[in-house]
Amino acid sequence: MFHAVVYGTEDCGWCESVVRSLKKHTTSVTKVNVREADNL
Image (tube, rainbow, N blue to C red; front, side, top):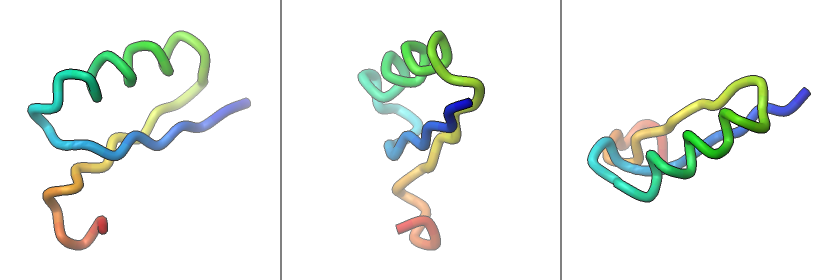
């Protein structure tokens, strides 16, 4: 069972494709918006 965390911004095109790819291989994906200062 895998859990992936993707760091990116909401309008990051390649981040979205990475998330889609990961969802095919992992059970869960967490997207972290790096524009949110608390997440850095």
